[in-house]
Length: 303
Ligand SMILES: NC(=O)c1ccc[n+]([C@@H]2O[C@H](COP(=O)([O-])OP(=O)(O)OC[C@H]3O[C@@H](n4cnc5c(N)ncnc54)[C@H](OP(=O)(O)O)[C@@H]3O)[C@@H](O)[C@H]2O)c1
Image (cartoon, rainbow, N blue to C red; front, side, top):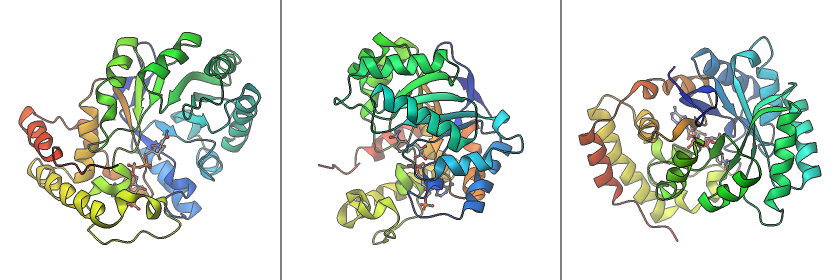
């Protein structure tokens, strides 16, 4: 598996990472044994980066079980504090995560989102303390824009930003990615498959079960979903022409950005995890990128 450096002076991490939101059950309840097998298949395939969060339901405890038997030492383990970013809450979330994950330290600890209820200086000071204490090797943030990152960086320089990025969610390209490049902050991009929209396997009218978050997302319903399915159909033709699956094309497309250190993909099964591998090696040429851009001009507008 290819690696990239996390930011200007961070560690090398695999260009594909396993996002552990689905194994927490957020996209439909999963069998724990299958989730554990998925984590181990990812690591066995060369993926070193695993990403979870306090808010990912059973994800941390399932990861804790999967990482026994020597798997922990083979990975770069990232988690996040979610929702309450007051100093006391950040500290106790860290301790809860270490306990659930059954580890002494994590490799990257991230603030899950920007929240004006909690002064960012106090949150980032606490993050820096946790780093000094050795509870985490690196710190990062998630879902912050460039201006918010600059505020956080002023208190505690961090190595990783975790934004949403995929073919139909490109907001970060204008300011946030250039900001990260200039600062030397690495990007762990999330939702690269648009939560399944960009897999090419869904067709209009598909109904997601109630325990799957997609049953509540407007882009997975009605006319909007039909338009996204059409778009993915055209993109799948590009993928087939260059010998990739749609999933592999979606990942390789994110990796064309130098500021992207790793693409976090949410596998639910060992087969899905292994399916990603050719994307790490794929190079998309200018003609292919142009074809994709033309298709993406028809990305449906969302309010
Ligand atoms: N920081 C944040 O706020 C934030 C937000 C979202 C995600 N994340 C992180 O980013 C990770 C990835 O995002 P995500 O899991 O939400 O969405 P995603 O990776 O865009 O999509 C995941 C879904 O796509 C389908 N899929 C995955 N691999 C596939 C394959 N090889 N072939 C066909 N279908 C496949 C699976 O669902 P089906 O098979 O059921 O279609 C899976 O649940 C998360 O797990 C999490 O670590 C972070």
